[in-house]
Each structure stands twice: as C-alpha cells, then as structure tokens.
Length: 431
Image (cartoon, rainbow, N blue to C red; front, side, top):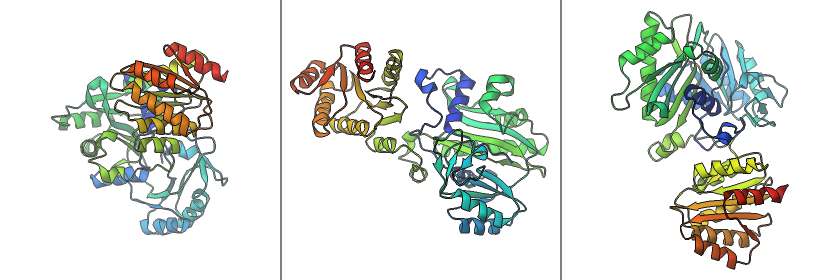
C-alpha cells in the first residue's frame, strides 16, 4: 500500500523539474515546512470530490475519535483496512507521533487495532520530513478499504505556462518522488497538452493510458478515469490534480489511491462550497490574518521584515537583503490597490512576529500612491508604539508628498535613497 502524500511543495518541485521554471532564488529555497496561502484540502476531502465525479477511489470514511474509528472500521466490512493520519504534509508513513507511535499509515485486518492505533494518533503531533520540528496535531484519521496494488503509476493534470493551459503529465513510475523521476529519468515523463476550448480528446486519454503501461481492458478503463479527472479539474477550477499512485489492482481495477488537488484562489466566489472546506488549522496564524486583509504573506526564517508592493519586487528585496548578509523574515506583498488601513494592518502583523528585529519598507508606486503608504506608516508607528528600527524606501507616484509626510512626522524613520541603500541600512540594524 503506497503511503506517499502528495503536497503542494512536492508539486512545485516537480513542476520546476518538469519545466525548468526559474521561480526566483528565495521561492525555490522556501523551507519545506512553509505554510502556504493557497487553499488546501485534506486527503479525505480530495477523495470525496473525486468520488463525486465518478473517479474510482477506495471506500473510506473519517473519524475524530478512537470510538468513531472503530465504528467506521466495522461499517466498511473490508478484508483489510488502511488507517491514515490526516495532515497537510507528505511522508506520513515514515513519520512519528509524540505519543511514541511510529508511522502515520498502518494496515490491519482487525477493527480493534484501528481503534487502538487511532487513540495514539488523534490529539498527538505527527512529525514528518515536511512538518515543523514539533510536528502537526492530528485531528482526524481516515479509515479506508485496503486494496492490493499490482502496479503503480503517476498522473497529474496541471496548468502550465509552458503549454499556455492544461497539460496531462504521467509516468509509469508511480508511488515515489516524481521530481526524482523527472530529474533522473526524463524519458519516463510523458506530457500531453490539452486544448482548453476543445477539451480532452479520447485519443489523448488513451495515449496517456498506453504511456502509463495499462494494457487491454485496463487501458480503456484508465482512459475513462483520466477523462473524469479532467472534468473534475475544470469543474472545480483546479490548478492541479495529482494522483500518486494511479494504480491497478490484481482483480483488474484502475484506482486513484492518493490524491492532492490545488485550486485557483481567484475562483473562490464561484466555488464557495469547496473553499468552505479549507483547513486552516495547520496554517501560520499571521498568514491567516493577512489573508483577511487581502495581504499576501509568507513567513520565512530571518529577522528583517519585508514590506513591499508587487511579488517581483518582494522577491528582489529578499534577494538583496541576502546579498548584504541579512535574512528576510517574510514575503509580504501589499498589491496594487492598497489602502491606508491595510498598511496599518500589515505593520501590526509584522510587529506581532517575535523574530522581526527591523522592518524594511520598499515601495515603487505605480498604481500605489506613496502618500497613502506614508500615512499608513506614520499611523502604525504612533498607534502601535513601534520599537524596532524602520527603514523606508519610496519611489513613484506622489513620492515627494510621501517623503514630506514622513519627514514632518518626527518619527525615527530611516530614509533610503534606493533599494541597495535600504538593504544595507536594514542589515546594519541587526548585525
């Protein structure tokens, strides 16, 4: 039984390996334990979505207590059961619990064992290679019918810039780190671009099934599953559907054994039921609060907070801080339509992070009015009693008015002439 839990982090790594996409020094180097802003569903939720679209998955249910787990195990009446801890991280099978239990995935034929194991999972932290050092508290377990797998393959549907739309990606090597396959055996990675207007063609689905090594009746069955997965992909506004393994059983079934679905956050207005399922229990609280105010925030390991407008400029700011020997504490993008209150809230979030020793504001005002930023900065400094050093570099729309607002404020703000100057001054404050 495969235990790999596909995560967004592994998906990004695979996409880089597949396309050679250069995402920037710091984005490529973001820690594996990083919480990300995008919607994430637990494995059982992804499986439920697939089942709703006619995709073949194992029979399963979830439980929040050991007693519930026992009831589910009895109800399934399966020859063998698989018990899986539900957290938003991969490597669960090789993880360990704060209770002393080893492994977040277990096979058993005895419902009582399901209960006993659940008691050592629920309410305890599970540590894997993709969690923080202290692990993540397990609040639910999934109990599923265990099916034998005679062969494992990999299948994904994703939006890819290289193809300007959706693409099928598959490999006959499933149940393993697919990014390693892409790196070491690229000839075993098959790609099939899909015309988003015409949709997936029968021949494309059959060709991918053939490339994955399905034969005879299984080839047609696999093709049908691929078409249903593509329908799901479009219907829920997914950016990626990843199945690993996409396997076959000894009795001739093609089954999606493990799934990860990523969604387009811009579609939340028409996918309200799906976004209501979003699990934020494992997210960084600062990141969750930032999202409420339409701020794009990702925490990092350093102590220089970055307060920037525009993702590219934010990435460049992180890079130049690193170049001068400092370490960025976060990636914070204000966006283009920022208001004074958002600036205030951004400062509030940054000052609530105990790692932050200095704040670097780097604004290039095109759409953004620098005067709005300046007013927000002065308000935040006064109302929050800012105690850490503040370095500000402003350029662009209404910059002269903005600089006057800061200069007349009487606040201990260090002005910078350009980004290089700002980075040098910020790093000097913490060295």
